[in-house]
Image (cartoon, rainbow, N blue to C red; front, side, top):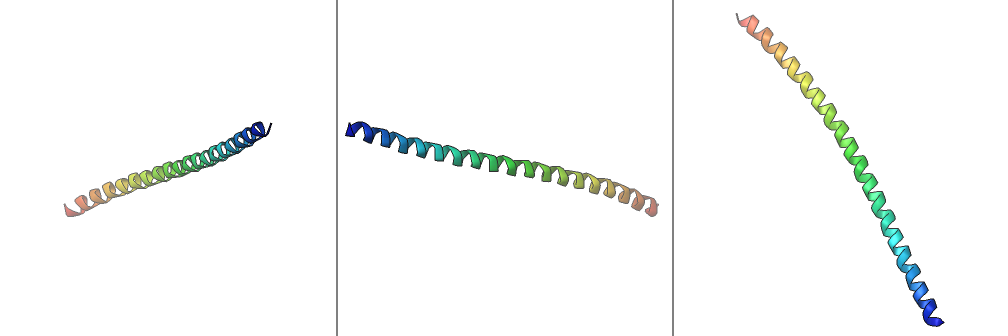
Length: 69
């Protein structure tokens, strides 16, 4: 009977460790997904700013060309 208890205790410890690792992995994946989402939003904002600067540069170059004529 003592051997069965040892086996059961070992199985419980293994199961607990596996559960802890699974929980930690789940948290890490969640954090990585959240970071990717934030990075995607920032990239969208930066691309909008670049487009606005392109527009501004185009207008400025037209004005400069007209002024040089």
